[in-house]
Length: 293
Length: 308
Image 1 (cartoon, each protein chain N blue to C red):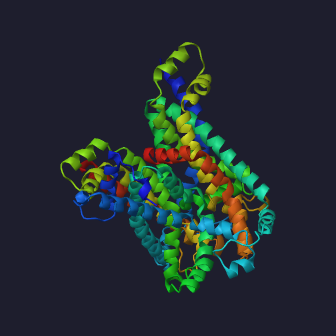
Image 2 (image 1 turned 120 degrees about the vertical axis):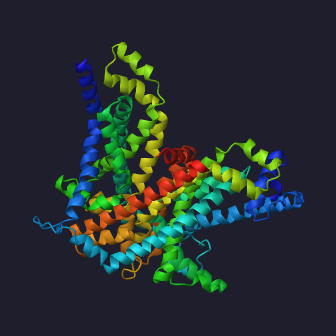
Image 3 (image 1 turned 135 degrees about the horizontal axis):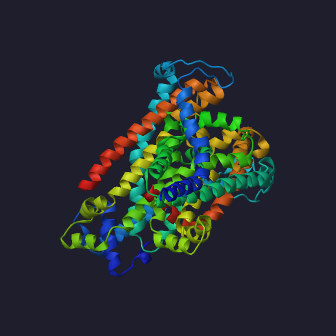
């Protein structure tokens, strides 16, 4: 009997081992390594380094550029959270309401998601720096003629536009899948009871797609805090460091400005902490509402 | 344009109720008759067409201007050129070492995907089938990392890849992706295996079939639906990932399509003709794949997101 249990566990390990080896080497080890290095003054090149306690964290909390990048990211996340989910639900509902043409629109709206935001970013760069000025000149519509890339006030919106362009389709697909799960008789019953279209959406459809909303908000929070590609492609964090997001700040600290691996690791751990806390809070709140709804 | 699209069945009425709200009409105004209904549908079509134009505009502009000379671009950025300038493509093809970069990207994705599917299907299956503390602990270990942002581990990951001499190698990058991708895939396999009847395992084992043969000949084929989802999600991720290749592939000979395009963008700062041609070339494989497998991809995306 015990030998059978032993055999069972041995077999389990044999099946899990290949995955575990790669996972341990390239996910667990870097995660724990990062935690350790964040407590040291390692510079990535020098083989020797010393333990410095929490001083990297203290320094990060007083690092003007890091705090600015944090604020820039938070602003970005808030805009994305509202706009991306709102647009995705709107598109999902409209596309689903169509008879013919449904597949076409769905295909088109999802297409940007297939492309890297680096490619998308370069295409939008062309739009912002060449097409918009041209249009502004021809139409006299001066709103378009801004320094979309060079002026941080406008490049925030440029980055936002690119990210929405690249991200809305993904959430739309999720919301469409949720909408298709809403039973038709439910809506019909509400309509017979005299509920208007808005009321049906508010009180029948919306509660039914609430689980999808949890996913949508979760994905948006998770991805927006980690935004890198769209900023890298459009502004590279510039001009200066005015449009830096957290991920760019960490990247530059570690790989281009100073090679301060220890200090950059501390910032990376702060990013992890933020994502973790926000995700836990979000899931707790939305799961509770889900049950009630 | 939308008038001939109106279905006259009762599904049209349902549509109208939905559309009514979205055209921001006050609730209760659906009864106002056929004209209101048509306006509602027309408004939906108009909105969606504008949104579709907005979505396709950058791609269209890139395509359009990639066959123009710089001069053509300056005179009219919106017009088709009198004579298409295909030299831009020859230029971009050469400057991005297109075939080589494409091949490199293929190697990365092939190595990564093979490892992810192979190893996580085995692990996910066995973890799902074996009850007990050890199994629970191992599963928890894999799930633990799913919230860790890539940027929080990238610094040490780069150091490790240097130590293991994986840097600068496309196959090495593929190996890194295995380590980064298995957790999510195991989670998806773990859930899916529950729908495969256990009796199958028992019957096969009684027939004297070994554990490995059982898995590879009986179970793995049954996991095909979730394997397809996992393959789609991971291919998209690895194909479009930029930061990890940027950190690991230090030699331009090993550059992926994205890295080559990025390099060309940096070098040709203002020569948009060549840049746009290179962007179109970089998009081409993905767009072709997307249009061919559109149905499966959209299904896989929804599936993956909802289960995760």
